[in-house]
Length: 149
Image (cartoon, helix red, strand yellow):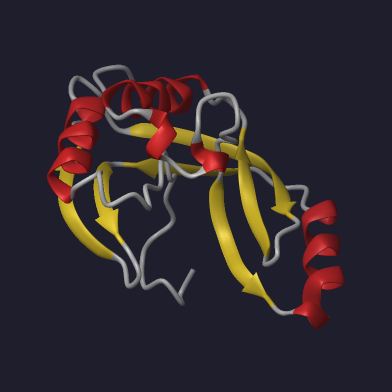
């Protein structure tokens, strides 16, 4: 993720269509973040997308809130404009760990994923709308702390 110069995150949609302007995406993100609070996500498994390129990612234990956010974005912008893997019914909630894993390291990366036996808890406290490449934040919404401990 250092290559992106961007912190760990969840991607809810990627639009390649010129029909989706930055302002449209920004409004969809702000709508999805409305009434939401900081989200603590627990991860216990490292998985991978075969690619190319091979991508390592963390699987959330409970993805109900993430699916709610994804549904909100999908309701605000026609999913037909979205890349296939980010459309409703195709999207896999995940937090990317590494992209562009070189061919000679695929076995090592998959072995690491298979042997992962920890639990990681991460607090996501901001929602962003970005364009890339390179990553450029076009809107950021800080999320308030939850009232529930």
